Amino acid sequence: MAASAVVDTGFLVALLSRADAHHRWAATLAPRLPPPWMTCEPVLSEAFHLLGSVGTGPLTSLLRRGALIPPYRFADDMDAVLKLLQKYADVPISLADACLVRMTETLNDPMLLTTDTDFRIYRRHGRQVIPCILPR
Image (tube, rainbow, N blue to C red; front, side):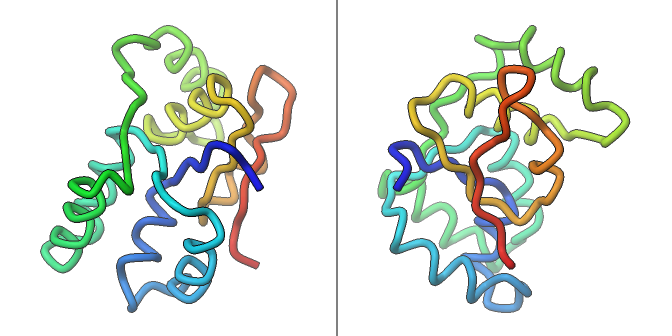
């Protein structure tokens, strides 16, 4: 499978919340793409917010164990992300999504795990489909 597993908010919420509609999908997929999973800080912000107090412990645990790492720095790549925000403003695209698109452009053999079907619309390097796994 992919060399670089990148995770979106939807995957993290689904994995860590049994109440999420996609929990079974995420729990089945997680062992197939073993950690460390990469993400960005805007995704972490969204995930902590959506999971609330129930998910704080498990999400913190993933980070402390190094199973989830946020190597991408928006400040180092701001112009490219801002261009994506402008390009997809009508979709719309969030800061987290734009950072993830940019991450897929900078990583070797990326695979994005997400529940967000907008990633079927976004393109990396202008025209390339973003390799991603979504629930069926």
